[in-house]
Image 1 (cartoon, rainbow, N blue to C red):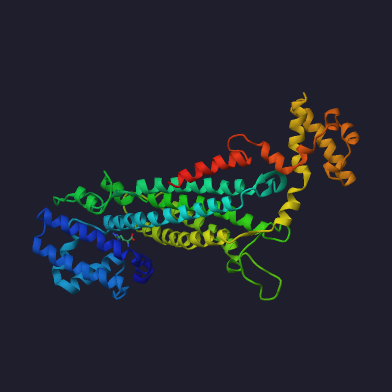
Image 2: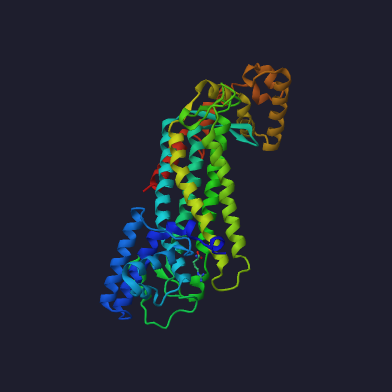
Length: 441
Ligand code: ARG
């Protein structure tokens, strides 16, 4: 029973924040004269010794004591005697564990924000490095219109920007201090929750003790943030996988982020990108697990809620492992200019521009779409590029097409023309880049 219900194997990573919370609690107890100053000093010394043991990996974890909170209390009593039992005055493990996960999350959010920002920065540098390079833009994975490669990369920048904003929102709601809720109803001791909150760097307090010990929204929100982020990273990685395949041949990934096959000597597998895509599944799994655990739980604390930790910790580890590696991999991507040029040279990508040109010559867009559709169908049948048709042939589809239209069939000029705000013209992308850098502060 004990081994099945114990959380120690995974909540031991809360050891440091647990001592931090206890130190603030015990100082408050002394300030409010709930324990004496002398008692507090002894407890504080004991807690500091324990913190050092944890830091030096010398803490004697004992699975017979269910969780990290009981382990630390037991160790304190070993060190300073029965007085150690006074630490838990006015406190329950229910508000203590809530405090610890809040503290832990706040630290990790700060670390993750930085990693996210670094990945955004990598994307910006990449967009600058590849300035002027064209790729086919796709819809339905069919070549659609030529775009600047930088423009395509910057789309991911803005996704990550929203992720960073979402993370700030998570932080805001994780920034409430639950301690003082006791088991669920508050405490009869004359505690000062505000003081504890300030000492621990919280900007607010939970205003309802039952809510304080029952709330796991912040974990659900964190995992929602993480799930959306992983979805974005998975899409980016899917593109890297596609682009580095022989079928596309647009980019090459550095050997450091690929592996060979044990059987096929020619293989260069994009393992990191694939695993990033795959890890998305376990992050979604953690989100669904905690949503399901919390659903239908009566107030207040229930042991079910101990299930909040593993998925959360695992997600933190996944993101902290993945984000820096992705940044490194992106930073070392090289382009295969010949393949890119050949793909972009497909002048069917300019069909929209031909249609727009006919609109400027008085046709409705529907009619223009029809005319160009016929023209492309003809080219496909004849196995010809648009630019290989002579003016008379083109003119048979519409007289306006018999004129000089080579500027419409040049991908660079077509891209150049898309100067609408947020569009792919080099000037518009430069503007976008300026705004993006501004978001980086
Ligand atoms: N190990 C527990 C958890 O992680 C700590 C709180 C336990 N409280 C209790 N009354 N059993 O949720």
